[in-house]
Image (cartoon, rainbow, N blue to C red; front, side):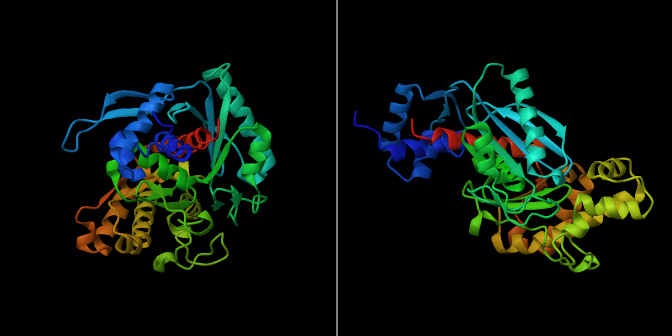
Amino acid sequence: MSEIPDTLREQTLKLLASGEAVSRADLVDTLKVAPSTVSNVVRRLLEEGTILEEGVGRSTGGRRPRILRLRDAGGVLAVTELGARHARVGLCLPDGRLLAAEEIAIDIAAGPKEVFEVVAAAFSAARADAAPGQPLLGVGMALPGPVEFPSGRLAGPARMPGWNGFDARTALAERFEVPVVVENDAKAAAMGEHSTRGRDTGDMIYVKVGTGIGGCLVTGGQIHRGGRGLSGDVTHVRVADSGERHCSCGSRGCLETVASGAALARELQRLGLPVSTTRDVIAAADDAEPAAVTMVRNAGRLLGVALSGLVNFLSPDAVVIGGALSSLDVYVAAARGMLYERCLPSVTQSLSIEASVAGPDAALAGLGHLVCAAVHVLPA
């Protein structure tokens, strides 16, 4: 048998590692090569023991395809999603599957050095507990601000003093001495959401709504990154009914000022409610506190207003709302209602608008796939 070209071998491993392909048919569609070429590559990788063939997938008209996956080679990937006050820290297996996850307290405003110390300690504790003796193969971090990709440098993040221009990828690589991926939190979560839902999801607008708001377009199974990797900034879209509130970006009337968890907490505080965090907002709404429910519903409507132009322009197959506020049905329902009201019937006829199915670990799952791909395309 002839040798597999290195580029084709690496592309195949990257697609399997990221979850973008799980069968020979997927590889043929994505790589745009002949089925015989894919069969050649898969046969050689199976003989090497690099990949495994197990189970069957869903039929699309012919025989049900055999599922391909990377062989567990030992070791773990450490992944974390940073928020303003909390971080989600987890371990993934070498094929990207999440092994363990927990939440720890951080203060993003303390700056990179202090936050990285806390995260590194959490990584060590997680490995000692869930994967003792397993080597660290790679690290992934999702940050709540604009991240240049693949450089991993922060570009003008709001509410993150001391982070602007910080080269997070280099700092992490020097600390852990393994391949590192640094990504924006909404993009990482969008990748995790898409991989959880499967290839049939189609084009998807993902919006992560927590303390702040971030967005991402996934098209053709790929994150749309735009120039410098900075696409998806829906948080600073101007909203007409915002009351011209001041935004952390220095402007007025941004979506963040009326539809984010931070905005809702601030407004409920002004009414005298004991609310200071997004979690407090969720608790108040779950308790059916009238002011909280009213404000959450209005915030969902304004999110729908902001997204309606994007939906009309892009005509996606799905709009998925993730992040902490997606747990509130009233928020998601209000956004859905406004999208149906503002968008063309031809666009919404088959549009899915719903809350995330990947849940709070969406970003960790996405990072697992991204780091796995980075690790497995490195030359042997």
